[in-house]
Image (cartoon, rainbow, N blue to C red; front, side, top):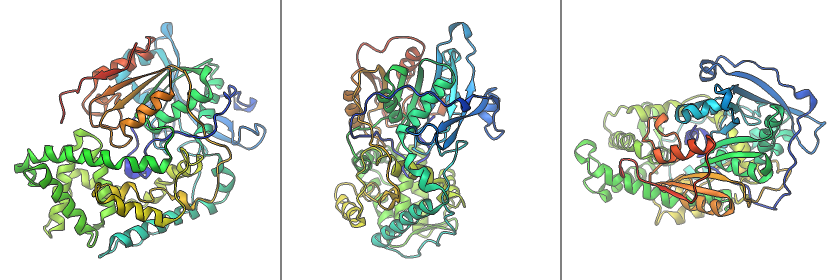
Length: 513
């Protein structure tokens, strides 16, 4: 239900599409060959199997302007409404990314929606080219080069540029991709959603999406306003910013999140030994990064350079409940950098396991396919000249010393992408009723971006939670601090209630951490 881990999706922040205002799209009518035949869900989808779900594939056009042409298969799951007397329709969802498969995502909402979930057919789906839907595959990445024993910021940057160029080339030259990649767009995922609605014989659909899934929900309201029933979007972005701008804008909120964590850690100086004041803790982190920019940290048979350390820090600083995990990880890495015999703490061990997985390079291609193929997702902005990234990284060090070099880097391989989108992107601006959720201290997709989208979605109401988090709804089900005010707002709305009369600010659950 939450955004896939940063490592798995190449930082995967959400994004909207910007460009020419399109006419409202006609409701999708799937081709006659797309009749649904339901059967058991794949055995590896344990959550769906345990929920008694059924699964199918829906045939949709690769190119909706050519409905008689090449087709794709979209994996769809369904758990029928248990409360048939009060059935409200169908509820779809998207977990974020882009690049996140979502066949079981809607089922995961049940823990927080409770009885309201029983009033819907819960519909999951893997977006086109992902998971069980017709996949896009790139050529294998091959065996990665061993990490350097000594390095520099410039060498690390050049290594990243080479990886981006390689990813773009591997995806471009794989058999058949030239015909597929131009159709990896949020426009087409929204059309696929509407095809699911039509194939199920429903007049409208309801929806919950988080991060990229939130922005996808806004795209659906723009393209299919009359088919939108109850739409809930959680943790969204500025629809007028370019994709690269959205990454860069996260730098300052990330630094503020690190300041918040540093103050928390300083109050526990006897436990973590990272400093007795916030600035002292920050200095420990900076010393760790400065050292790793020249000699990567050796731990558990792996060498971690500064770019990876920044990525790890970003992963943990997103959620206030991860303060302990971040403090333990920094303590472990500082010990390792000092030459002590340091064993990875559990959270760091999980990161290292993923880092050393043979499938790591291939696991990131799904996000790249949409980031680079979606008319720029949202409006381009990825510089073609690698030196632009380098200059932005170096300039950012003054006021964003920890995260500036990360968010200004060439995060996605779009500078080298070989295909171009087939359609312009979507500009958001409509009166569709939408319930929006946003954490005020979200340092992945900052709060100002949600305010910008809120102004574009003129029929929306915004529920603000005063927490450091990426994602607001259903946090309790993920063993984080719940925001009861936000959970109630979503449950009441999806249960048939009206939107709040005005925007809502929820009290901080349990105080600031």
